[in-house]
Amino acid sequence: MIPRYSRPDMVAIWEPSNKFRIWYEIEAHACDAQAALGVIPKAAAKAVREKGDQPYTAARIARIDEIERETHHDVIAFLTELAEQVGDEARFVHQGMTSSDVLDTCLAAQLAQASDLLLADIDKLLAALKKRSLEHKLTPCVGRSHGIHAEPITFGLKLASFYAEFRRNRERLVAARKEIATCAISGAVGTFANIDPAVEAHVAEKIGLAIEPVSTQVIPRDRHAAFFACLGIIASSVERLATEIRHLQRTEVGEASEYFAKGQKGSSAMPHKRNPILTENLTGLARIVRMAVVPALENITLWHERDISHSSVERMIGPDATITLDFALNRLAGVVDKLVVHPDAMQKNLDQLGGLTFSQQVLLALTQAGMSREDAYAAVQRNAMDVWDGKGNFLDLLSEDKKVGKFLTLAILKGLFDIDAHTKHVDTIFKRVFGES
Image (tube, rainbow, N blue to C red; front, side, top):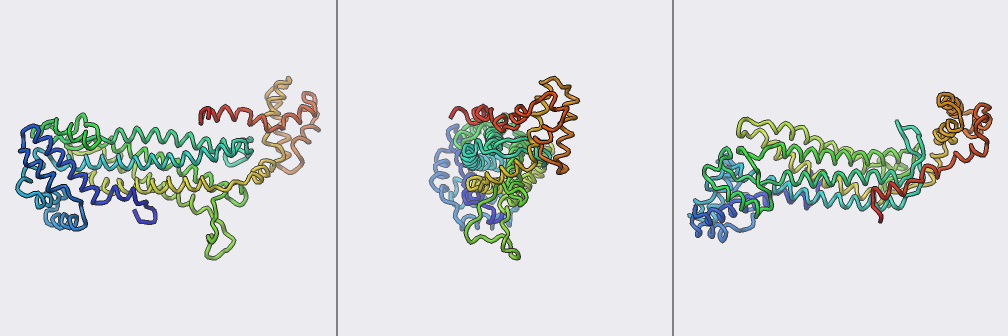
């Protein structure tokens, strides 16, 4: 990803220095296990540790790249450069292993590292959502369905729904991390013909991964597909919240808006503009993350025990999807934390339709008073349509309707236009979402 949408810690996971470091640890741990089994001399394993355990500097990386330009094989280039550091004992490195043992185990480790950063990002977003939700627990606003005013809710409830969604996303990511974090050191076509399964178990423990129960020559790609699908779901949740904020910031709505910093400019042509640029940006970034899902699904199908049709895809979507989502989650947490909320505008919009948002309460009261549901619906809708057409206030029109008056007095009607009826269970919902705290 370009630096504009990247954060250093996530970028570092995908840097060559980290990748080669993981490759080295895989090989070194494998040597330790092989030495313990008596397959290679203990002196060789010791030499790999003493001579090869050096930082992967720009010079070492450049040397690996130089070798790869000749060999056209990245793992062989890595092993050749390692041999230059270790010396003659390097002939015992990579005993019974195949390139995928290194590549797939490394990718699993990198995705696990990326998951840990993403989980921290979600925690930051959850904290911001909880704080703002509790702050506006009873701030009334209109709920909308199909983009049209429906019934009153509170802004805190709106945010609580996003909190619950991202908490589910966190649980999904924990499960996806567990599923992706497997180690395969099983050799060509995965039969352990030339390497003991104990080596795999040792490397897995040291790298912090689980053992892949059955690999072919690669770790099965359904694991990767599930991981990237999870990232795609999280990205869609990011977009849902970003889209909600964008709608609320529309001039005609004006219920909430992104923080506009001193000195910030909204338009090169129109000095008055205060645009929702951060949430618009998040909408676009979500598309980039979701873009990885279909290729990851297509990577499941490989020829026989392996091919490399998945490789080029993963070299791109691994960094791009995780770096982008890391940036997006962090940006969204900042947007929520600094979100400017306009309760007066919320109340103004709530009152905009002259009481129509209480239509269901009137409908139910009429049926409970003895009117058939069909007649009650017709009476309420008839008066509601007159309000839409600008012919009066809903309560006034209902009070003048003789059919309605046969069942409901004016005092009863007035009591139905009470927002408390729509907020009476807010505490119950909040306890479900946030617990007793």
